[in-house]
Every structure is written in C-alpha cells, then in structure tokens.
Image (cartoon, rainbow, N blue to C red; front, side, top):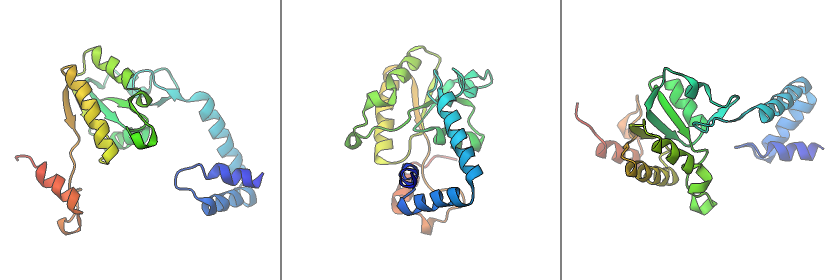
Length: 193
C-alpha cells in the first residue's frame, strides 16, 4: 500500500520518487487528517468538476463564471493552453474578454493533434459570429508557436482579426541578463510610442 501511495504521488508534475516518498511518509506519520482532507477534496473534484461547454475551462456548472458573466467582452476571445494560463491572465486583471482553453498544445512527437485540442469546438464558436478579435496566448515554445499558427489560420479563414500576446523583456528586467532569443523577440516586436 505504501508503494502504491508513492507511485500515485509520482504522477503529480515535478514529483519524483524521493519527493513522493517524503510526501507519503509525512502524510502517514504526521498529518493523517491532512491526508483525509486531500482524499476528500480529490474525490469531490473528480465527481463535481467538468469542462465548461463554452470555453472548455474547468467548471462546476455547464458554464463557468467567466462565460456566464454579462460583463465580459464577448467580441474578444483569448486562446490559452491550460486553466493555469487562464488563471494567470485573470490575476493580471487587465483582460475582460472571453476565453477558450485548449487543454494542451499541438505536439506531433507526443501524438497530440488538432482533434485532441477540441479545435472543432473553437471553430464552431468562431462560426457563430460575434468574435472580432482572437488573441493567441499560447506559450512561447515551439509547440505553442505551432499551435498559435494553426489556430491563427483557422480564425483568418473566418475573417476574424488575430493578435498574438507580446513577448520580450519582462518588466523590471535588465537587458544584460536577458537571453538572446528573448531580446531578439523584443527588438523585432518593438512598437511606436
């Protein structure tokens, strides 16, 4: 049973065998109540959380709170790879549009193609009309860029304006410490003041 617990904990991202062992022993030795709470929370989440029928984000209802809100700008649609990316944008507090969560990115080497990302659902949403700007906020990785390019072409076929999130030097960053790829993107993506 202890081995099964360690193997289960190893399924979490960033958790290797030693960390899983420390977690398992901690929960069993010092925090059995915490272990019960984790088990109950996981069970409840698995039973009650599904995907929003509109944006594909996690939700306890048919529509997530963002999609159900009348205050959001329906003409803007921001495409992100994961609920964590959506959460990061929401915490910034500057975007008031709608979202579409891919739950991944195109990665042929990992066997992830367009059908695995519910792009058909995204296309249907664009076909409904109303979306004037599609903001591509996929990660700045090779897979994220390929995903953004693919989705950008789908949107352009529908006559939707496509924009990409800015990339470059972080606020507070000092140029001498910025890697050359980031600096190259910042220089090539510069804009007028």
